[in-house]
Structure formats: structure tokens, C-alpha cells
Length: 510
Image (cartoon, rainbow, N blue to C red):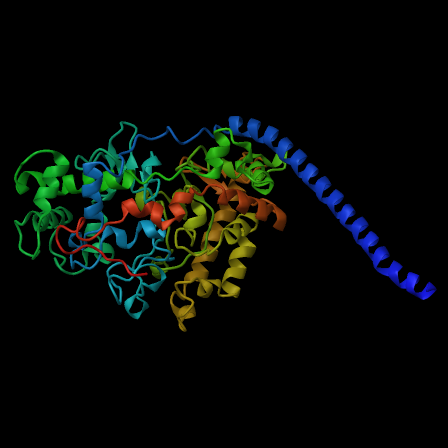
């Protein structure tokens, strides 16, 4: 009997122990939640001040853009997806800037006209013989309407102080009378006349750029032979609201205008960060709030001060900064590599400077950098913390061969053999600029330092792995969920037969 009682007490003691343990765990959990709530509240107070100090006003009212349903934007969508705007009728604007790929192409370096299968996009788009003559990463067209000062990595499309626009056709600081009213209309003139991007070999190399643009317009207007199916005139008449002839309506200026309206309609800014700015304190996690504080605060305030260059609601100062990301791609076949802004200004002080990218939806637009050399945000932040070490490791480990575009290429290491040497030159340039700043007594304790009129020079900032994690969490809070969802971006994707006036609509395969 005594044995039976003793046996029956065993499960009871275990039950009591389990209950005590569970109670302790619940108390710890409640304490952790309370601590997290206190930390989040303190961060909210800090962020309130930092947002005001750094003028991080809401972007929502910052741009007047067309709606995708408007007739001009609809015409622009059809043109954006038409391969008839390429010389050989094999690529469209959407080839490198597809809405389903977040306005870009997922590649480090665009393939352009040299694809094995023209309609294959994204990581399945392969270059014939791995020939990649386009040397810079395709930036996203999402939120391109928010750019005010210039376009392209080197800023060769640029708004002048007068409000007019300078392009390669006019030369720097000279107004281009045919630029159009917007930066995006001016930009639309150039991929179609670039041999590796859209021109191809159809027109040969005898026509000048304006002649090529005129021939493309004539192709759509039926003044030139080529399209077996052609219903463009009625679509232009509908968009412009008048029954003019093709000669009057289908000009390249009007083509560029329509494409510009379509691109400007791609505004994706309804992110958790935007919701937080609008007053929803629960829109960000505690980790994201820690990352935001790091992003906005100065080193004196224990921050990384990323906002020094990634300013305002668009997260860019639109200037040209020297950060010495790795050199890679076709420009490494040149003596000094890709010298960036210097190709536009011819100013030696602008060597290896590139435009500060916007960080809106940055989570979706990997790989990163002017040549798409970093595959993750963690790699980018590691570079900012220690550029010399990060670049040295990049080449020691052949990290470029881990990029999705090159992973399957057995000869990846031999693609651009001079990339490492040129990357070291860019690092030398960065070191010299940092020393020059120090010698001029302009050094301040922050991660970026003014160097000349173009922009800033990277000053490395110590970042722990936990801080990098928080910064990445914050950057993910800059993503508009719509930009990441195919059904949400569907209105910007051309559909056959509605958006196929010439039978040459890009039907993407991923």
C-alpha cells in the first residue's frame, strides 16, 4: 500500500515541477515583452526627433504622376513592351525593366540584344558565349518619377539649374532642345540607339542617333516597311485625343512622352516605413526601429548616419559618391575600368563616383552596385564597414562566381580578369580622397565626408553583426508590398491581344 502511494506521488511532483517551469517561462516571456515594449517606445521618441532633424518627410505627396489607367500611360505600356522599338525587333524596354522583376532584370549585368533566347528574362536570360558588353547594372524603373536631378549611374541625363535637361546629345551643362519635359522622356531616347542594349545591327552603323529614332517612329507609323501587323495609329489617336495622321502623331518625341508617362505611373511607396511616418507606431518591428535609429543617427549619437547620402523621403541625395564597390563587367576592359561620373564631366576628381541609388524597395532589387557585384544587403553593409577588407575577400573568395547570373558558368573566374586590379585602383582612389579630406581639416566623425561638388567620400563605420541585422531589417521596411506581388503589379504588364498593336509584344518567360 505504501509502495502504491509513493508511486502515485511521482507524476504529481513532475506535474508541479512542469507547472512551476511553465509559470517561470511565462513570467520571463512577459518580462521580455515588457522590455521590448519599453525599448520600442524609447525608440519611437528618438526616431521622432531624428525624422524631423533629417527631414524624412512622407514621399506620398512628393510627385504628381499619371495613373496607369490613363490613355497616355496605357500607350506607353504598349510601347514599353513592344520589340518593334529595337533595331532587330528582339528586345523591348521591358526586357531589362520588367514589372514582374520589380522594374529591373535580376541580373548583375544586362544581356541586351545578345540573348540566346530573346524572350527569356530574369536569371534564365543567358548571353551568347557569355558576351556581356553592357557594363552597368539595370536600375529599377519603379519610383523613377521621384528622381529630380538626373538619371543613369553617371548622371548623363541631368536637369540644369534653368530647369532644362542636358543629355549626351547636347553635352554636359548644355540644354537639349529635344529632351522633352521630363527626365524619363529624355532617357527614353538612348537605349534605342545603343547597339548592345536595343539597337542591334538592323540599321547598321551609318545612321546617326536622330536618324535611328526617326526610322523607328516610321516603322510604327507605317512610313517604313517592316511590321506585318500595325494598329499603332489608332492607339496614338486615342492617347492624344485627336485624329491626326501618323506623320504628325507617331514621332519619337511622342513615343518618348508616352513611355515616360507609363514609367512615371509606377509609384510604389506604401511601405511599412511610410505607414510609420503616417503615424502607425506598430508598423515597424523593434529591430526595424533600431535599424532606423542607426540609419538616421550620427556617429556621435551611436549611429551609422547612412542618411548622410541616402537622404529624404526617396533615400538618395542624387549626388555622385566615391564608395569603391568592386569593378566588374565590360568596363574592366578599359585601362582605368569604369570611372563613373568622370565620363560625363571629364573631371579627374569624379573618377569612380556613381549616383547614390534610392533605397525604396531596395530589398527587391538585388544584386547591388553599379556593376551588380554584391548579391545581398549584408554584403553592401559589410563593404561600408570596411571596404578594403570586403573587396579583398570578394576577390580572394571569387564571390562574383556566387552571383546567380554567373553561378553556372565554369569559366566565371576568367570572364573579367582585370577586375581585381581595377577594384584596387578604386580603393586607392578612395584612400587618397579620405586622406585629402583629413589634410584639409574637413574631417568629421561621420561615415561620409564632403570631397567636392559632386558628392561625398565613404568613411568606414564600425558595425557589429547585430547592427547589420537591424539595418537590413529597416531596409526591408522600405518595401511596398504591392511591388513584390505579381497580381498587384499586373496592371503595368502588357497583355495580348489588348496591348499588342504590332504582334511584336514581349511575352516574357522566366
